[in-house]
Image (cartoon, rainbow, N blue to C red; front, side):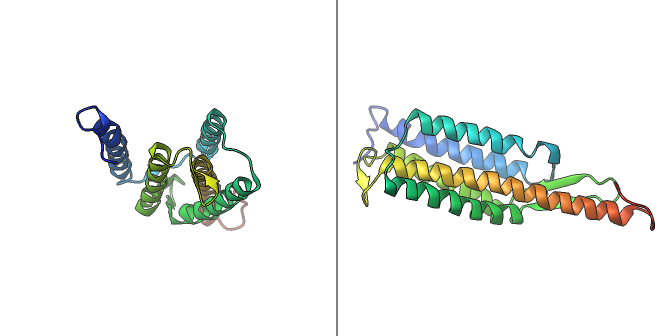
Length: 183
C-alpha cells in the first residue's frame, strides 16, 4: 500500500520519522558533554514514565488473555534486563574534589529506545492494528513494547542510582582523612 502523496498520506508517513530524527539529533547533541546527575531526582523520570505507560495502556487496553499477559510479563522482564545493561553503559563520574556526579548517555541506548518507539509507531499505524499476528492482537504487541520500554527506563534509573551512590561513597571515603568517618 503506497502513501497517498496528493491527499496528505505522505505527511502522516513522514511526520513521525522527522520527529524521531529531530529527537535523536537533540539527544545526541545534548549528550556530547556530561550532564549533572541529580541523584535525589532519579525517581522522577521513572515515575513520570510509569504514569505515561498507565495512561497509554488505559486509553486503549489490549484484550487480556493468557497469551497477552504472558507477553506482557516477558516484555517487563526483558525490559528490566535491558535497562540494567543500559544503566551499566551510562558513563557516570564523580569529581574527587567536589563530589559532583555527572553522566552521559550511551549512543547505543538512545538508538535502542528510538528503535522501540519506531517499531511501536509502525505497528500502531499499520494495517495490522486490528488483526492478530501469531495469535496475538497487534495492540497487545504494541502494549508489550511500551511495557518493555518502561521496564527498561525504570530499571536503568535504579541501576544508575545504585552505581552513582557507590561511586560517591567511594569518593567521599577516599577524600576523608584517615581515622575519621565519612558522612
